[in-house]
Length: 136
Image (cartoon, rainbow, N blue to C red; front, side, top):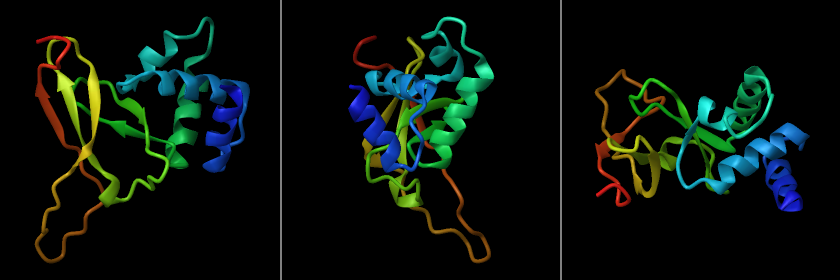
């Protein structure tokens, strides 16, 4: 797995350090978005700021995207390989109100909106809330 991880990081121009490899693998093994706290819980005795800097590097290089799902904690999930985090790459997220997990709905793009003249689009946050299949 380490070789695959190194390749994924290098494809996004990220130097593969031990912490970056570990954080990537935590995100890669999850099928949901994770908060900084949830990622931090995967490690023994790792400084929170180190994990945060790693996530920032990943986000700056379009390896992950962040989600504000309304829970008060920003969550992070891996981008698709061809993602550039441009508006056309944005997708809907689903927050389960029972278990609190946030899932990427990568096959459901954020609806395009025609803004009035003079407005310019920068980002969108589209979160649906309900019950996931595991909690139904």
